[in-house]
Image (cartoon, rainbow, N blue to C red):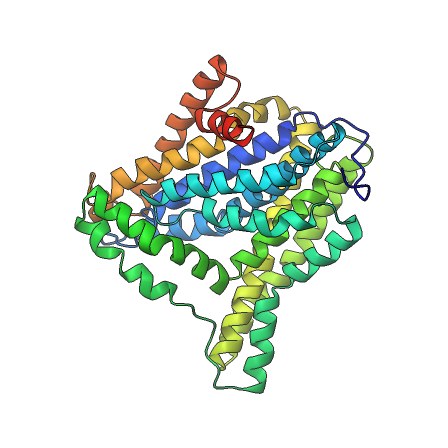
Length: 387
């Protein structure tokens, strides 16, 4: 055990608020994926209601549900590392192996859904791993640096110096085009092959192009800091901290939203305009995510609605199982190898199908956890972690 790391003196008891938040996040992710036809942007003629559904869901959930999920990933990493530190054990090598296992789950997910996020998390987890024993101050500075979107700051400066510079593009758009044929008319084997060949690169390229990778790393670190400061427990002045964070988030949105909706369009330089749009969107999503996290946590701990919110926890406890499950279900519903409903299902119907998927998964989660302590894939992941 490294002498530079001191395990916490308080127990890391089950964080019910985290399970609730994880359940909300995975539910929102599933509904968005269904609206998107599982990353297959082919739709029948859309109605006005369809467009309202799309705009509303993406404003409320787009970029926020994944952000909650990422934050809780960092929190879980901290808890696992700290629990082992209490026993005098170093969890870092075991966590690296755990990320390799997560990469395996992600590759399986790519066989059904090319928008997998688990592979990105696996790589991001390995990048954050060397930072787990840094001081809170050092982690805070790294988090701020990542939150400022350093790639976009570089392109802003470069675009200012050289107006002919194009926006950052690694080619994710062209790779998306290669998926259309197998998703439309391909067999399951052809979809799986395309997912591995193109989907893996698409996820990383898109994440880098759109500020998602740096924000994910920022959120991993923020989750670690929340774990160290016990931010989600009802302790000390946390209830006041949640309220202050909600107020600060609203104030931030008051300034960010109008700027994000107007400033990029006023800039003629495409590189600068694109970079501004990416930065402001990431900041908007982060502010909304923090408001949601604190609102749910405060409601759970400080109001009578807490007993109702805890009902969401089983869905969050089986987030890995439900995430991979929605890929199989959604691929079958929308892709050509299954029902092929991409041809007929507009955004409204797709949302209803997504809600139905969430309800079915939620029912299964409650039933499964009534008989088992963990979800099937969660249990497998744990057993393989400690093999």
